[in-house]
Amino acid sequence: MLSPKDSPLGKLLRQYVTVRIIRMDNIDIGLFEHDRNNTIYFYILNADEQIYMRYGGRDNASPDTYLNLESLTLAAAKGLELHANRPSAPPRPKPDFPKN
Image (cartoon, rainbow, N blue to C red; front, side, top):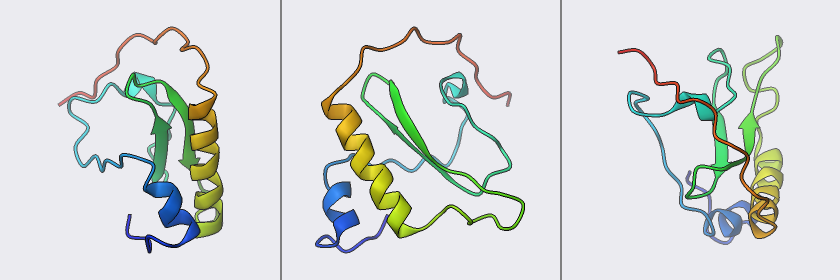
């Protein structure tokens, strides 16, 4: 994400390793509660694939109703807070890979 490094969001994002996934062939989608009809999701997880939270969503009015820099900044701050207080990982669900 391109955000000025000195902005509140930029300062938070510097503490993350960001990854853009463009193909889901080898991604275990069983880890993620998701809805394929949404515009975009950001998942905040650790290196052990423990998911802390998901950012994104929509309503019937607009695909970007809930997507703005202020709410993304709040989500990024909350993700860092959750990581600092890292809860024990729940058992992983059964793997679920997309069909090719």
